Amino acid sequence: MKKNIFGAIIALSLSFAVTLPSNAELKGNKTNVHVSNYGDKNKKVKIAAGIAAPMFSAMDSKGKKVRLSDFKNKSNVLLVFYPGDATPTCTQQLNDIRDNYKGLEKINVKVFGVNPADAVSHNTFIKDQKYPFQLIIDQNHKISDMYNSMNFMGFIERTVVLINKKGKIVLFERGLPDVSPNKISKYL
Image 1 (cartoon, rainbow, N blue to C red):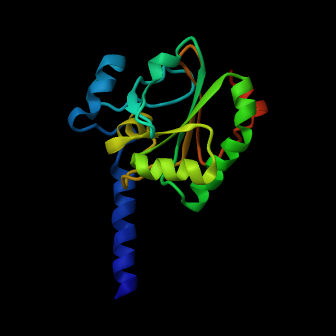
Image 2 (image 1 turned 45 degrees about the vertical axis):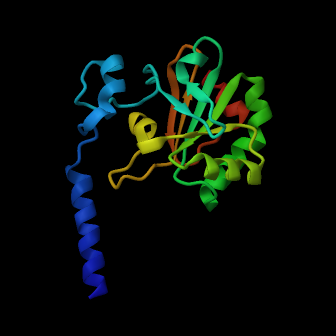
Image 3 (image 1 turned 90 degrees about the vertical axis):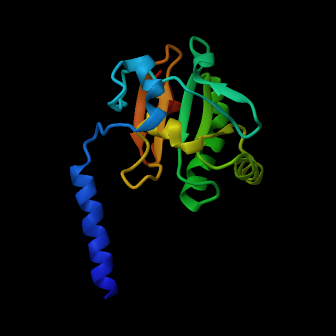
C-alpha cells in the first residue's frame, strides 16, 4: 500500500514537472516587478547571465531595507538563495561564503543570503555561524520567484546570482558553485 501511494505521488510530481513550462505564468501581484522591468506581466522572465537584474526591496534580519538599486554603480552583489536556516547543506554553503567573505569584500562584492525565514531565525543563524553578511527576509518567496529560484513544488532551489555594478547578472548557477574570490572575480 505504501509503495502504491509513494508511486502515485512521484508520478503526479513528474507529470507536473513535464507539463509546467519554464516560463509559467505568475499569479496575483507577484508580476508587479516584472511589469516595470520587462513589460509582459503574464510571463516570468528567464534569469540568465547577461540580462538586467530584476530590482527588489526587502527587509534584512536587522530590519534594514535592502534595495538592489542602491548598489548600482557602487558594488557588485552576490545573492545566495537557500532553502532553510541552520540546515546542514545550507550551513555548509553559507559557511563557505563566510570563509571567503574578506576576499569577496576586497573585490567589492556585497553578499546577501535570501530565504523566507523570519528575522528571529535569520539572526540566530547569523549569530551561531558568525556570518559577516546579512540575510534577507524573502516573505512570500517574491524575490526567489523573481529570480527563478523556486521549484515546481514551491521550495527554494539552491541558487547563486552574481550581479555586477552595472546591474547585469554575470553568474546564475544552481547548487553549490565555487564562490572563492578568484572564481567570482573572473565574472566581474
